[in-house]
Length: 199
Ligand code: DGI
Ligand code: FE
Ligand code: FE
Picture 1 (cartoon, helix red, strand yellow):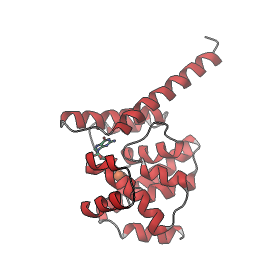
Picture 2 (tube, protein in one colour; picture 1 turned 45 degrees about the vertical axis):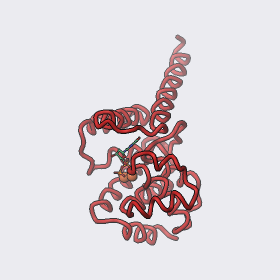
Picture 3 (cartoon, protein in one colour; picture 1 turned 45 degrees about the horizontal axis):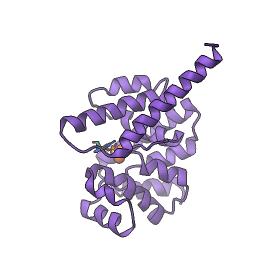
């Protein structure tokens, strides 16, 4: 399926407001791929499809999780997490997307995961910072995203985790793994830098 058909298929799954968000994520993901040396074509594709099943009825998502063997622990966590895994399944099953890097970036765009790839980071960060986003701290995340996707994503996950804590909600373990993994990567980069600088 070419990109124009994928656009139409995706647009048909969601209300206008969500489509506008999707276009913002596409635009932002392309910029991040350019800035940080990512695959621009894959960034555009994954961003376009990232919220494919976001507007689907909860019952339909639950049925897919049960019948298609998606991780059953999803059912014990916030329903907001479901559309990422269901979306990855759906764009494979319905649109024939077969690129595992693209499918993983969609699957983990909400929760993150332990060792996030560059494409995972691009999609997740674009989702946090697209022009239509407006939440406390978004400007700080946009600023950090000019220099470091890791620092920006840590700030993004911090804001999500803080919100969940304030509401007394459960936190999906992959989000903790993602944050720890990003801190590890930052520390590894710093020690590389200090080796280069001889200290
Ligand atoms: O689909 P979007 O609204 O564009 O954004 P998203 O896919 O990042 O969904 C984010 C929502 O998921 C956000 O309102 C917080 C909620 N959520 C619930 N539990 C968790 C969670 N997000 C993360 N990262 N981790 C959780 O455990
Ligand atoms: Fe989403
Ligand atoms: Fe989104």
